[in-house]
Amino acid sequence: ELGLLGREGIATCPASSMAWPDDEQVLANATAPQGEDFVDSFTSKLQALNETQQSINTLSLWLRYHGKRSEQAAEIWAAEALKAPVARHLLFIYLLNDVLQTSRKKAPQLCQQLGMKMEQVLPRIVETATPQVRDKIGRVVNVWDERGVLLKPDVVRLRNILALGGGKPAMSTPAMPAAAAAALRSTGSEAASLSSCLESLQSSDVLDRTITSTQTDGNLAQVLLLKDGPVDDPSQLSIALGRADAAFEQVQGNNDALRAELEDRKRLIVLLCTAVEQQEVVCAEIAAAIKQGEGTLSRVVDTRSRLDNMQNELDAIAGMAAD
Image (cartoon, rainbow, N blue to C red; front, top):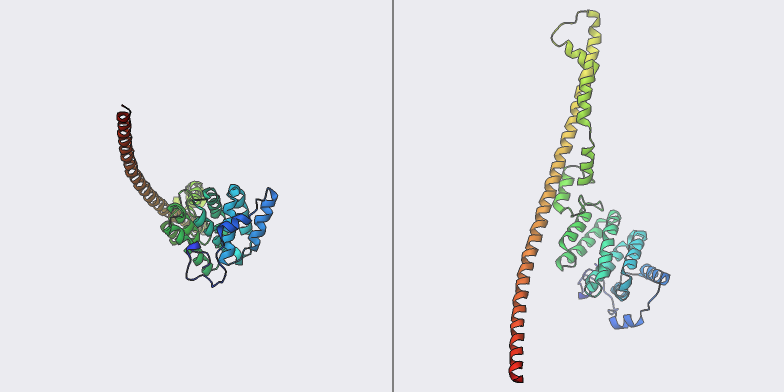
């Protein structure tokens, strides 16, 4: 559970006699590596990172100190996380957690860059993680949600990654909610996405092929001609039976293909419905945020008006005093 709640502390943290690092002491001892020195320095620190709170928080503070290199730091963090042994993957999540919780106000650019890389790294980590590790990552995401570390759509997107075992959410912009991911699984298409489903069905020619084969199949045409009349030449009966069998297989195959196509398109309808529901939720959240913003704006305008009135009164008093 290490690092889950940052410096506010958690009851399940492994016992340790090591004190939290002093911010001023760490910053005082920090150097400002340049160019390749920064890459080597950060890489070595990541490789030396261990599961103690002091190790994670010290490196988190070091990253904040070098916040001007946020983009480069995020690139290195992502590259090292993907190269690290599976057993160390959780350490990279805990480091990210500490940075996001302790530096979002002091180093927002660093948090933004790491957050962008997180959605590239997390699927790979989740894909190879044990159920226990996935649960721990899920608890970190829950903390981010509860404390408002990430926006709601970002939390939904991360939970989708966890739910799909590292697979990409069906819709990346905006993220598909957990309900949509469940719909994907319930339709027997766990790895499918709405975009891939649309692309597949838009390029499907099953209906055209079945119609064409029905119209051009010689066996079927001959059988249909014999529908209302007897076979004139008994010697041709076996040939007619062969054609009837071939026509039956052809029509049955066409029907099976059409049934499969129908089921695929029904699944597409389910995906579209869940996507529409997600958009409705997002729109409602946006509308609520706009309403809240309008209320805040109104209060700001009222406050500004009162301040203007106070300033006018002060100016009048000052004018009277001058007179």
